[in-house]
Length: 107
Image (tube, rainbow, N blue to C red; front, side):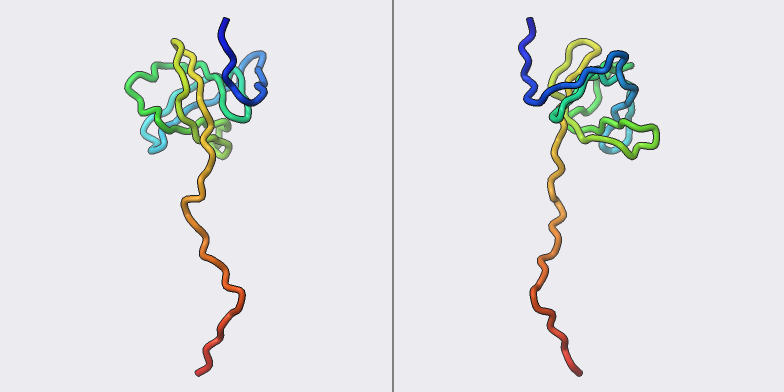
């Protein structure tokens, strides 16, 4: 019996949810079925081989337009099924600090 390691509650899809995974740089894409999902990750059945692909970071694309997606990393592989962990967005671009008083220079 497999031990459940997922922290969040999962939602299982009876027939799966069609999606695809795509490389961060856009050089590869594979169709997949999302079998279940939680706040922290998902279980996917991949349509084709993932051998040789860089799965350190990739996108799970959930819409045909590409507007709904999550950044992921590979958690585990079991045949054609993979577990992915969702990566949290980090604030790489710091917003400039707001100054409380605006200084106006007169000429």
